[in-house]
Structure formats: structure tokens, C-alpha cells
Image (tube, rainbow, N blue to C red):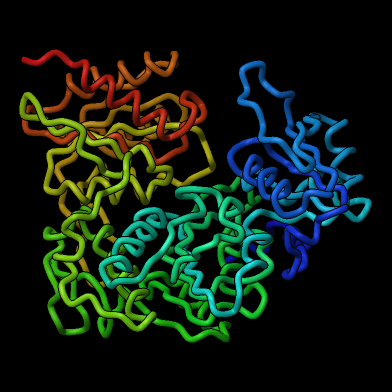
Length: 497
């Protein structure tokens, strides 16, 4: 998994697995980050550790238009520090609760730990509160975790099981630290940022895939994978793991696990082949009968269904159970159909693999891809090959590549120009080469408007235009939701012809 010549970062120190919010009462507690997770930490401290002394630290000073933070322990405002002064204050704390985006490695984290401060997370504190009888299902993967978590939550409801969907979706975990009426199952979407120093595993773990992502945060690809896999190895590990047999890294990881494993994406279990969802030899439904698009969406449904079965329940009619499932915003979301063209928002796509899944979902095309964004050291060779040849891998075992007529690329600022140059090189001299337009830097609305106008110019009347950027958004847009919303607004503003 690791290039032998690359340095091996030390594993981050783990907080005690039994450290609870109530244990912080009377102690000095730093909250590192002032977003939704930081605000939830303050609310939890005020409710469950009212005698602690809390402060908030961010890298930069509080913006003048920042939303006010919740009152802290004791009912009053908490100090908000930043920069070196803030790091010194965190280092003087007994415990520091970091928000997921705060790096767990590096000089700042080392400075905070230097005098013995325990660095923990809301996820770790929340898990410490769960009794042995509670079912906590943790779902992760480089792509597909949001959709799979939502599918599982939906299917559990169809099986008559109450569940709450949390983590990266819905309310922060610390806002449900000790609910009066806990659900029968918790469904948590968990990112690598939440897993890198996880001290204990959820009850049931689902890992969909291990691809390449978030390298600036983790340091290198192997460390990213190791941080993801901590969901399987933390503490005593889960009671049960649901893994994709199609991923060679997950097959290798399973050899070291003490937990029993249920496999999906293999011929003896739930898998997708020939446009059908199969349970071994038994035909469950067609891929096109599901509300999630394409082979990748169907594979996510298989993982969710396997989880339901692992809890002792059955869904006899998968397509029927999902008929009223509402797909998530910005995930292969069809925005409009006019002038013969279909416009799709897949702004959640931040990896080349996600973009390829989106292209394959709209086979046979024609398709115009809108792609590009913040450079996160991804490898785009496979995406370029897919765009150039029209052979788009689906990732399903035994399945041939989807054949897609890729007729154009609109390259967004950031990684877009390099992607465009690589595609030009790969199709040089071909009369049927995809049309390419590059969008210059500008304001968010200017970039979104120019991208939609460029796609309208090069897309034939029967084409599908897919915003699936294969990169994060922060070089131009606030986040992927902002990127998708501005794209949707620009599509809505197109003149009708």
C-alpha cells in the first residue's frame, strides 16, 4: 500500500476510548474549530460538563459576520482565540476537542499535545457514551458513503427499525449525546477526518472502497487508507464488517481482521451483473428499477441491504422498498430538461472515480462533462482514458466498461486546464475528438455561468450535461453545495429556444 521510499508519518496518539463529555467537568477544555462541530461541542459541554472552563480556537480571527457561538459552560460566552496565541491556549488545556477538518498530524497538533493535552473528537466522545446494547453502524469509503448511509436509513425504516442518520449527514453527533428516546440503530456517515484518531469502532462497519483522496490532509495515499481502515481496527474492532470484495485493498485488510466479514460485490452474495441486482444466482431487480443511478448506485444499495440482513431483517422487494427513496441533492441530480438537453448536478464528485461513475450512469450518452476544481493531488489518467475512448469502468465485478459517447469537456478553473490538455493529447488528430472549452477564473457566479454557456454551445440537442468536477470546490466556490447551487441557477437562467 505504501511506496517504500515515502516517509511514514507516525500514527496520531489516540484519546482514551472511555473518555466521556461528563469526564471533562472541572477541566480546561479547548474546542478547536468554530463550525457546526465546534458549536455542537460547546452545547454538549454546557449541558453535560457545566463546570469545565472552555475556549474556542480557530486558525484565523473570527470573521466580522460570523454567527455567534452558543453559550458555553456556565451560560455565558466563551473566549474565541486564534493564531499562535490560540495554539498556546489549546496546549494549556487538559482536553482539546478538534473539529473533523483540523489536521491530526503536523506541527500545530504536535504543539497542542506538547504539554500533555489530550486531543479527541466529537465522534470519539459520542461513541464512548454508547452502551454495549446500542447498534451503531459506521459507513465510510472514498465515494458512495452518503448515498449508502441514506439508503440504509431508508431500508431500516421499511423493515420497521427506527434509526437516526448522523455524522456527516444531519445533526452533529454531540447534539445527540444522551437522547431521551434513542433509536434502535444509529447510522453514521464517517469521513477519514473523523476516523484518523478513532479510539473505538462502531458496532457494525461498512467500507465501500479505498481510492485516492484528501492527500494534503493525510500526507500520502497509504496514510489516507490506513486512517480510513481505523474504523475496522480501532479498539476491539466492530462486531461485524460489510466490505466490498471488488476492492483489492479491502480484501487484503480483511485478512488481518478479527471481526467476521460479510462480502458484497462477489458472485455468491449481493452484487450487480448484466444490468441486474443479484443475490448469488437469484435475481432481485434491474438496476434501472432503482432510484439511484447506474451500477455504482446499485452496488451501494447492495451494501445497505446486506446491513439490514446482518441485523436479522429481510427486504423481499428491494426496488419496491426504495421506490419512495429521495436521492440526495448534488448527487447525479437531474436539474432540468429543455431544448432536448438534460442537465445534471453531481457537484458532490471530488474524485476522478466519482466523475467516471457519473458518466457511466448516463450511458450511452452523448455526454458533456463539466469538471475541474481544487488540486488535491489526484491521478486523472483513468478519467482521461475514459473520456478519450468512451469506455468507462463501472467497478462491478465481471462487468465490461460502459460505452459512453463523450462529446465534450468544459474545464473549470484549477485542475480543469490540465485535464483539458491531457484529453487534447489523447485525442489529437481524431475527427471525432470531444469538443473542449476552458472556463477562465472569475467570481463564483461568473464561473458557473460561463460553464453552463460553454456546455450549451458544445452539447448536441440530445446530450446530457453532467457537472461532476472530480475535484473539490474551494478554489472558486464555498463548498460543493455552493458550486451545485450556482450551476443550477445558471441552468435555470438559460434562454429557452
